[in-house]
Amino acid sequence: MNVFRLAGDMMHLLSIVILLLKITGIKSCRGISLKTQELYLLVFITRYLDIFTNFVSLYNTVMKLVFLGTSSAIVYYMRYDRIIKLTYDKEQDTFKYLLLVAPSAVLALATSHVYTVLEVLWTFSIYLEAVAIMPQLVLLQRTQNIDNLTGNYVFLLGSYRGLYILNWIYRFFTEKHYRQWLVWTCGVVQTIIYCDFFYYYFLSWQNNEKLALPA
Image (tube, rainbow, N blue to C red; front, side, top):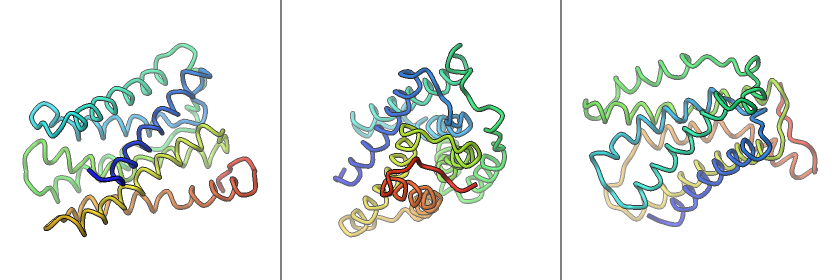
């Protein structure tokens, strides 16, 4: 654990808190992609199956349970809450799951370091997390309906990954034999996907304008 890892985890947690506040506070999920939320839930389920077999620390276990619980709650609210589900942009949120899930599964089967169920699913989750935000970004481009809470949610989610890159750099120079090429590569790809959003987020902040992404 180091300051970059901790800050990244807190950014990730804060992004989810903001999203839950938006959904439960104003009873609306407008501008939020259910597809992205379900992909993140799939990421957490496949990555954290080791919670039953591998205890790292109390912090690690609690964070896994928090991410599983909050992601499940978000999906539940968007799918089944009688008020919130009516605000979901279903007609615009049409990104095809298979375009992200299938390549991630194939790559996991082709590149997994050890061919056990847990290892293959963990590898799959790394690939899938790198691209899970894409339905959300596409939805924002289509609808141009980006309120402050939604914009801040996506910004914090991208910042979490950026801080994790700093964590990896720190560990590379301070931990002997620390190498995670797959995780590093997917993390960089994920951060690159956010770059366009970051540009327009800071531009809107600088000009005190409503955030809008080019269609």
